[in-house]
Image (cartoon, rainbow, N blue to C red; front, side, top):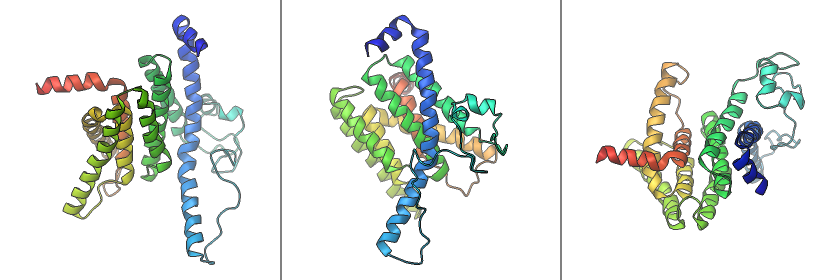
Length: 291
């Protein structure tokens, strides 16, 4: 920790360069998490279903291990295993010109995009918070929100394996008041869940349709646990604005069919991250407009 403070105080540029490089590595891991966690959950649900109903005509699940570390990453088109040199964050994709080295099939630009977003968001957080536990927690929150954003865009899913630990960690960090008081954090967690839970059931009773999922409740509860109940109005307003802008953009670009449901989790995550860094000045500005 002393070394980190020394770098921060005397070699500012080196501190941010090293942090940016580390964040690129984290972004590479987040790509694995975003892709594999939903598959792992689906296989787990299938196994639980087969074990519960004991139906012999169900096809057996793959026997080989499948987790965040095994099997090794490979090209989904030809099966070529990604080498260490082909797995350097951002640079490998640029060097390979966005194509597999074996079959030359295009590699999605989203992989370097996630890595770049992770690095830029981490640097923004590091520019706001000095080294310490508050910065470490803010970085972890940023990384989990980034993973949740892309998983929800892909699968309309906010896994409990990410949202619930995030909620409890926010409460634990705020025992010492890292971001808000413990009282504000507990009220924020309960209020965040109950606000969207109430909206969900009001919408369902009025229309007979489900407007959002339970994962959205848990994500807002987690954000309330980290940032306190005072941040919830701002997060809801920002998420609605971000959702409207991105939704209109996707429709205009014809990448989002109107009949396909749009996830709300990414907009909550983006709004929560904005509130993490600029919540207080934005709230003061908003209240000034009302006053």
